[in-house]
Image (tube, rainbow over the protein chains, first blue to last red):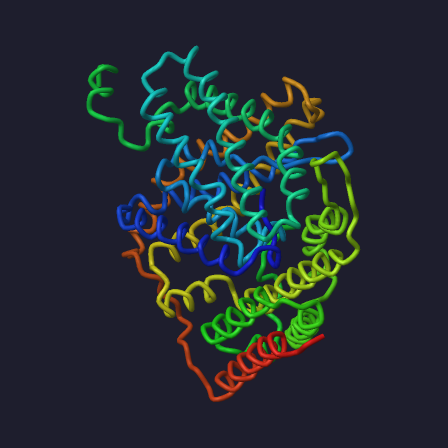
Length: 212
Length: 251
């Protein structure tokens, strides 16, 4: 999912930084001094979570977990994903420095969208409905990120058409694996630490419905 | 061993002695200039300059090459797929255009030049000093704080993950692409999140009891010598020459 340095035109890079940076700065203003450490520390946990290698044939892949970041951190997911991408570049060599903004947009906006969908439509449902639906929506989120990445590659010119299509085809398996593992994590969290799934404020009506 | 970027921040070199703020500005401009180059020849010169800065920083080359292997893996498909054109009208055909290999070469050289430059940029000072420099340059304080917090705790969680994986293996778990493996992976991610969430409150209280008020303070005082400005000028001049050479050279 990460696009490396040197691949994209300058206009795409600048647009990525403006969109991602603008969203992060806007949302960071809403973070008070006590919330920021929580977002940062959990960003570290997400980064390490994506470090887990999943064997796939002769190689292994790494989880993206950006759908889960969106559900847990909501609008602050873009900051968490930006941090994760920065550390993946400087510590592991994945992705890029000039493409931080673009990669953050590709993964961050679908994650924020999933967080909104989860908290608006799924949060009040019973677990038997909530977890499978969350899996489906997570799969859609990863698919959306894949399509965005392919479109961004196409901004480099028509020479990138075959690469963009190959990128989408190659990520089909990742969509399924991400959806499945996100479902397992949500099921785990709902039993062990359910308040983690409700860190972003619920609309008042749902709090009343849940008897709080 | 932890994958710290600043593993060699303790050695001495002209790049290590360069003021962190001016260093980040200089390298930042150089990286942007390289990202915008349009010819493989100028990208090659950019890569050569990156290696020159790397050798000046005395960071071991094997350390850098080890981190760059993922970058090369990510770029290898471009050599295979960029030259391919698939046409569906009037009938399906697949053609191979050798001229596009130059584009793949340009992308690779640019990516390598930037990838190599990141090491002298961020690996020649302790990470918290680089972040302090970013804060002094005007980056939003909240975001710099978040970077520092994350960096500090990700090594804690890497250790936790290592212990969880050893524990799983010692109980007979062999990772695979099956339901049991997905459950174990999911639980490992879940435990990392639960631990981080529970730790946050303790972290915040510990920091407040030590006077945390949202600002990074260090004992290191930024003192910019004329040599620091000279180094900045040299790197900026190289970036400018590279850009002009790329735009004006007809080859």
